[in-house]
Image (cartoon, rainbow, N blue to C red; front, side, top):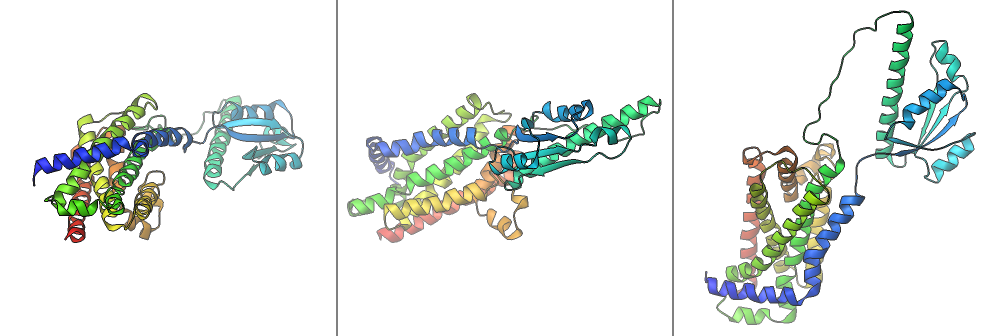
Length: 376
């Protein structure tokens, strides 16, 4: 391999990128926009659930029960209503996710130590949010019931029965913020998509503009041409990574507990594989349009849906779980979350790092083999 020829090719590719504002925008601006949009808009937290209330009892006891929900950060009372038609209208217009109807006999039943019915009407069109909100409501109701039992026992000087005192301790994400879970995974998805899109146009563009024949006629070897085209986009990818890490730290305040050097080493490995995947797509595709479409298909859908970025892989069907092993973003997301949130080192992440290495080496070998066929 002639390093002088590689340097000349890399310089040529740098000039093309700098002179093409669209490529620069794709490389530097789009990752920032994606981080801003996904970082602020995509949240798995369920807070301030809009709650409509029809209190038929209207006593101090029912008011005390409502205050359990009013004082919780998980619910936001949007109003008090007098009939089912109004509750249905609030749910139909998506102004309320949940409606609560307190029976007219609520206080009398409580005072006579009988079960007091409370109806919850939940909008199940958003099943995930509805399930979480139902869990919150059940927990608040259980807490109210416990308070009732303790007050009743204290009136008769009876000690409460023995019970389990569960004291949960959350590791790595103490506040259970979904942003701390999403942002590291989002970095992996963005790097894979942008990297593959950038390099997916390189060889296809040379073929469309007719400059490929000129390159073939030169002494440049296939490996030198690939490396020369790879270097500029690797530098851009590292800049994207630095921007993403800086935004995670200073914009979203994601806790970073691991080794920064390890993060950049393993990120460079993943970046290399993603760039070479785009290069392989560019070599295979007949034109730039097909190359960009193939790059999106090969990176966005698997990276977003099958990597564990937003949905747990363990909840997927067995066949889909097997397919996720072919998605390199799955291993890189595990690495990022391990370094960011858990502060683990290479000893724990060795298997994921090895699988990333296998992916990168495989793509490099395939790219070289495929490109040789195109030239010779």
